[in-house]
Length: 289
Image 1 (cartoon, rainbow, N blue to C red):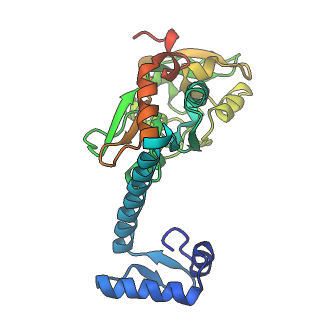
Image 2: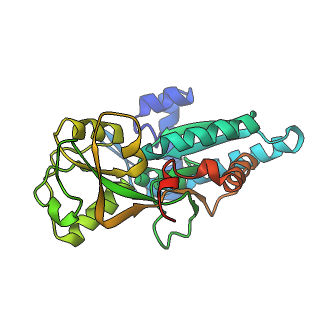
Image 3: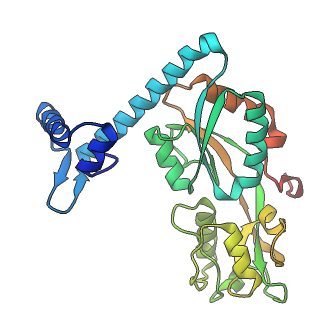
């Protein structure tokens, strides 16, 4: 019910009658002495208490799943499921990594979900994801997560081939520049650097996909700041300019520090650590380390 926020759909998902579901929810609210759902004629919403209970419930279900997988592994070898969040900017190297991992562990099922950094961190906290390749490091001081950097790569300015726009951040004031939505780690790096440089580019285009940004740049609609490996990958022609001052991004693999790690996830984390040539950035060989 907390996920659907609709009594009829939730009852259908649970395969029980709607009156029975409503009765169970009212019984739970009476036992807790709390209102978990705000109800009116138009919609159903979680209260603050309901959101807190949902977070705890998702963590418990995630832990139960991990225990079940561990028991199965005692007699059947490494098997199970990994719910992996993926940053859009890490597609190429993640594909190589998953191909190699799945070849070594054919009984492990990997479910991949492309999300931005904020969505993945929320999913890790709630137990909806087991691990995530973040386009940046987790927030400092977040002791609920463990992480491992996957390399470091410069960000570069990308313009149409005929442009003579320089790479100084100070020179981007008033320039049409592709923006990335809230929750994007690369977007936050760029916004912070521009603010520190005291410049305000024009922000007519907000884009999630780096490939879309490159296509718009190539025809002269805007400039963009991209990881160098994406800027140098095959695609519409663009001009690549080094930024001054330098900007870098450090993607990472993150997982929960508070929940039990199932054998399948443990195998995946160890595989990443033992195979840095697969886990590292596609453009890492170009970057100075």
